[in-house]
Length: 106
Figure 1 (cartoon, one colour):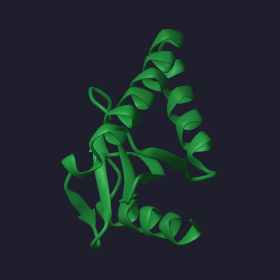
Figure 2 (cartoon, rainbow, N blue to C red; figure 1 turned 135 degrees about the horizontal axis):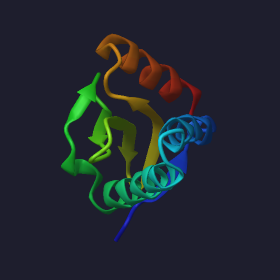
Figure 3 (tube, rainbow, N blue to C red; figure 1 turned 60 degrees about the vertical axis):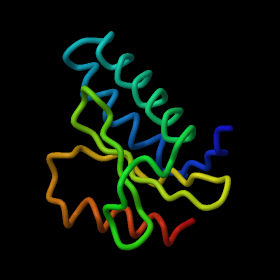
């Protein structure tokens, strides 16, 4: 049974930035990113423990294949908190700090 998602309030802005970036290359590529993001979230909700803990003791990541973006999330009970979506090419310390900050906001 899939878990229930709770999206951080800034997730929409994260996705919009990535969609805009890809849509500048091709409108269909922007839409493909958006569909792939939501398909990745669905996969996370089905089996959240599948992905390794990457930040502190609770924040997990999942790559949005074939795009170089990471979804950061926390699974607690039957709820999955989707914290942020970030370009994977950024400095790892920055990515971890964004995920930690957003976890504190939830």
